[in-house]
Image 1 (tube, rainbow, N blue to C red):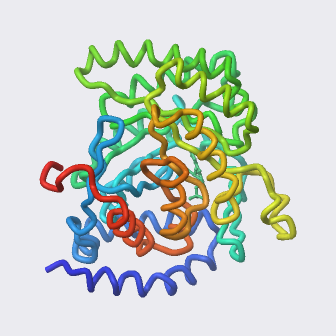
Image 2 (image 1 turned 90 degrees about the horizontal axis):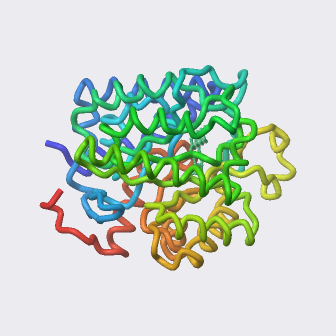
Length: 362
Ligand SMILES: Cc1cc2nc3c(=O)[nH]c(=O)nc-3n(C[C@H](O)[C@H](O)[C@H](O)COP(=O)(O)O)c2cc1C
């Protein structure tokens, strides 16, 4: 029978597993870990180690039932082929992608760097992915996961910004029948020019275009899939205020704050600090949370926010909720601390913020 004890053994082993993985190149370690998780899922080991019902503390947000408040941020399951296995670890939500319309290789390697002393990562992956059609096919193969699956979508590197809307539309149309929500990624620092789509005028245009399509797709598929925009933490107060006004005027369904940062102040003396790309993990927490808080104060609770960026403890996750988030996501601290962190966050948030739905309604 599945017990919390077996999960405990699993967690106790993680420092050893991590020591092995950290001897490898970060991307090799990434692929190996996901392959091992898929194998453990297929063989039934994960089911034994991770009791599924233990982390039920359902909340209703965006018209969706989230089994708990802790999600996996985009970029770990870039292909959407590890949903069931990752789901066993307790995530209430898994955001897959980023997907672009066409497959693309991403930037030259190496393109991921660990800053171990800071529990941080710098990455400049550049939307390496097999394309939205492959992502949809993979997600359709998920069988056991009961949580929320978000599709994170972007544009191909060789698509000029003037044509970006067509890329997002292509991804939206294909993901729509399978997705629980769509995250529109405007904030990766690794696709040249992408963040320019965060200008208030460009955002307003894109939101309008995507919402028109969303309306048609709602009618065609008989379900309404919420649209969320994922923003960068590198925005000043005036920019945040203007964007919030655009989101409120347009009736955006939800916001994901934030992506990785270009700011290196918190890791200034680290030998890897000058690597190009986005910084994630602990050193991003304060900046990311300040931006979340600024958005929340402008949005006044009218648009739900998923808080992500630098969460590495229950205290951090609680701080995101206090700053105005309803749900949280993690990525980097999951790599550093392992699956025990997910259970710790899900349980801790459930205890401090009672579920808004009875478990049996899931
Ligand atoms: C290696 C790596 C790849 C990522 N890829 C994506 C991506 O494809 N799309 C995206 O929206 N965010 C991506 N992110 C950003 C995360 O989703 C998240 O917003 C960011 O890492 C901050 O959270 P964290 O501090 O918990 O890692 C990536 C992050 C890392 C570390």
